[in-house]
Image (cartoon, rainbow, N blue to C red; front, side):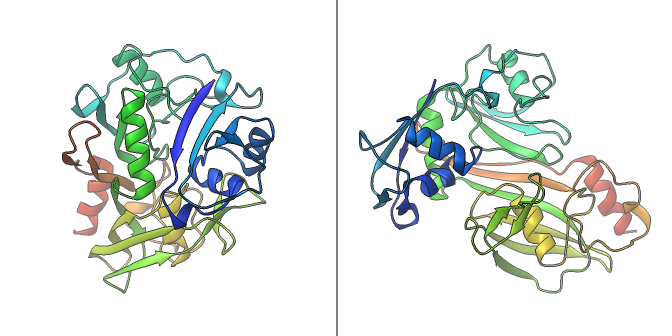
Amino acid sequence: MTDTRIQLQGPEDQGRLDKVLADHLQDLSRSKIQRFIKDGQVLVDGQKQKANYLLQGDEVLQVALRSDPDSESDLDLQGEAMPLEIVYEDDDLLVVNKPAGLVVHPAKGHATGTLVNGLIYYLKGQLSSGSQAYRPGIVHRIDKDTSGLLVVAKNDAAHQALSQQLQTRQLKRTYLALVNGSVQVDSGQIDMALKRDPKNRLRWQVDETGKEAITDFKVLQRWPVASLVEAQLQTGRTHQIRVHLEAIGHPLIGDPVYRRHLQNIPGPFTHLTSGQLLHAHQLSLVHPRTGEVLTFTCEMPAAMQEVIDQLNG
């Protein structure tokens, strides 16, 4: 059983219980959350409520998710030795630079070879219980083919504090993205709600009935065929940067999924088939024990820098 405590944070957490909880537990479908509520696994200020119960935004949700035979929660997690680039570590948390190609946590059909397996081995199991049993320590994720910084909680108190910062947007994540085409504006904000594509559950799409999603961006460098963009997440939806940049006509170079506006471009891009050129290069958080603001940065991977070097001639 996985226990999660969620302190609601005001107007953005008002509305139906099932909808608000779906915003906080993005790995779970709305229908699955409704089933958990019906089964009494969700309490609002200590009381059972129906899925359509209207929250005022100041309640405490207690979520006790029992093992679900249809989920990854029954996976037998094993530690595995693997190289890890640890950027920072103390008794409460660590920050790791994840390489592109490494899956963050196990899932059906992919129970081994993930970052979580490596963390279990490295920390000898000293990880928070997490929001789901198959992702101990994981406060937030980045896609398999995205590289960069990820914070990991070593205990439940740190996990709760960092998750709260994620909800209140104190935990800040900034990415570098190489996109197709010359972005004409120097900076901007993309405010487009996102929803899972009903025809392809591996994709997300812009949909005004979806969840709020906001990305701030600025152009760091541009060429005739490409642009280097810095993107900061104000929300953290699945594939958010990838979907948002495609939506404004500038999909990430190498993205195998979101490439609707991809043009036929020459040179250094033709061999890019392994994944999108997206790197989580800066992470800022408030330390859960000391209250100190910590900011971490890491250089873009060599493959991304190589493309920039070729663009620069």
